[in-house]
Image (cartoon, rainbow, N blue to C red; front, side):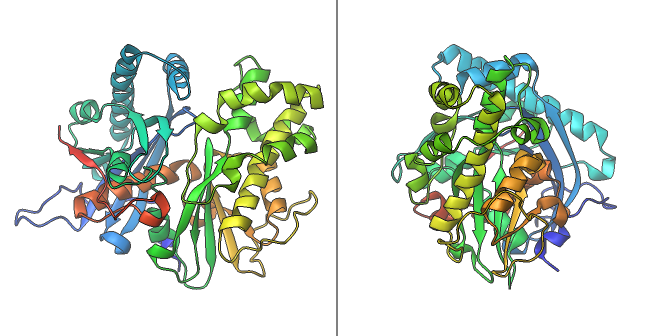
Length: 426
């Protein structure tokens, strides 16, 4: 049985936990609500997790998960301030408070739907990233909005927040932060696994077979849904925000010359540890590339197909360049991907999560681009894709309480392991 088998949807029969027993020791079991809002800015994912044990022996079990969208006006304001956009300190202040209220309202709503036995005693809140500027050791900066104090006050629950700031204070880039939780959940004695998240940005956690935490490799591979979504918003005048089920890309043809040019982006050649964001692949990138796309084809479906291929091909190229054990020479094959989850000869599993996992066209392109890997969805392991990152921040909040470092220095470029977070009491 893999470690992820312990994380399955189910019902808890125990009572809600508190931090300490009457004797002063910590409870062996904690119910934690993890929250996540990604770079796509589409809303808030919430996951209530029952966690036994600590550190690498942590055994999480998902009790329930929810999703709620941002109000359209809040989402528009949020996207408008995301770097490299310019804004005012007044708008940042209002958004910091407004997002705090949105997180608080979402948490209170989700907790209110739960039975008394499945209500959390702690919240893990990373906040909404609006700016991420990785730099040399000790020089990375970033900004996450959403006042944790408002969440604590409205829910009467303690909140662990500011995870990324703890890693940056230790000299890291503040991202990616989920690789430690990936290692806890998915490490396998015989099979090497790539946990591939495809949100706005795509990121991978490489878990070599039988490897320790210090052997984990993780980084942002490049754009996930970000370029696709921006093109769809442009094409539809904002009426649509995503390529639902990959239908537009499926009707289009990949523009080979445009794709070749995009894959020459310097980020793809940069060695890990590395992270990226809207600053590199956001709306500014799309506006800059529209002229090239129009010159190559008048069909918007071809533009979306090319953006989808960019995600798949950049992921495949990153694996071959930077992941030990993945072939660097095997050519990318023709369309007609396998993607059936059968074990590959190389014993490599790619486990895909995030919104991109619900795009069949992208999944087919991805399986075709990496024929040496068995491409599977995270649902095969009993974990809903939409809940995965919220689960990770529930685990990181528990790690904070236990005094266990939750970053991997070789991944974030931090000078040392760090216990991540700051506790905000109601």
